[in-house]
Amino acid sequence: MTRDELEKEHRKAEREHLEFQFLNQIRVLRLPDPVREYQFCETRKYRADFAWPELKILVEIQGGTRSTKRTGHSTHEGIRRDCEKSNLAQRLGFTVFKFTGDMVKRGEAIQFMEEILKCSE
Image (tube, rainbow, N blue to C red; front, side, top):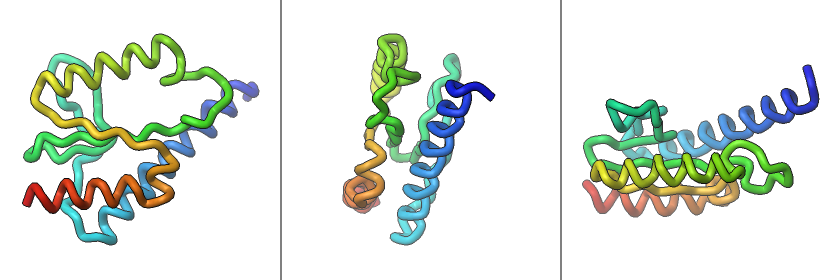
């Protein structure tokens, strides 16, 4: 396996760990279970990391924000795709919340979403 392939696998594992951590936080607080990898548009393959479709809420966890290497979402093309995805979701009536890995680790993401979800009950 090349160095680039190893780094890609590491980023994927980090992203999955952050998503698992966020999901555990949701469950500890007994918040409504989200749909994972929710395809919010029938004509595009875009997926949100977490969704509460009945509330029209999507959550994206932005891993790799501290990477010094420009890869994936941090490239011009990646940023363009993220903008397109977010804009489409909003056009379809979804509210999109984005959190960094640090926000998940420090509990800021779940604290914010707890307030949002409790207001939606």
